[in-house]
Amino acid sequence: MANLADSAAMAHIYNQGIEDGTATFETRPRSPREVELWFDGNHPIVVVEEEGEVIAFAATFEYRPRACYAGIAELSVYVARAWRRRGAGRLALEEALRAAEGAGLWKLLSRVFPENAGSRALVRSLGFREVGTYEKHGRLDGAWRDVIIVERLIEANL
Image 1 (cartoon, rainbow, N blue to C red):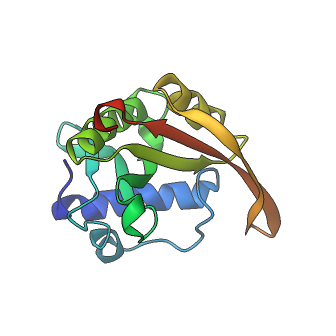
Image 2: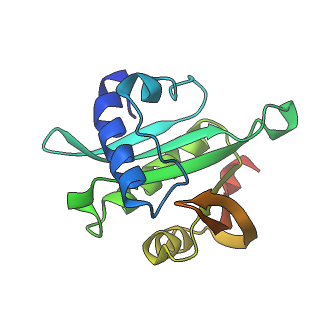
């Protein structure tokens, strides 16, 4: 599990994802303090470390504030550039699934840019299904972008 001390490394990795423009609509870098606010005590956050260095993370977030959705969480996975395509994202996602099950969540969902073949293959390999596409879901660098909605039920909690 991640802790507040991991916030600076997580912000650095997340900011790489923002810079690359392939994984998020966000364009403004995040500070470690802003990442600290992700730790709400209810939604698991995990990190993958190599020799004490955080190289990837997976974070879950509140899906909607209504009580009927309390067991559903949004999921994000980010990997440091130097560690991409080396299994760190898989490790982070596998641990996030275990942590989500332990937290009593029954579903994780996310959105992936259609051209992000690596992320799509990763989530598919771990049991996520592509539910559909949000067309023109947001603008990035002045262009409308679609996203593919993915979800994974956590069978143990159904």
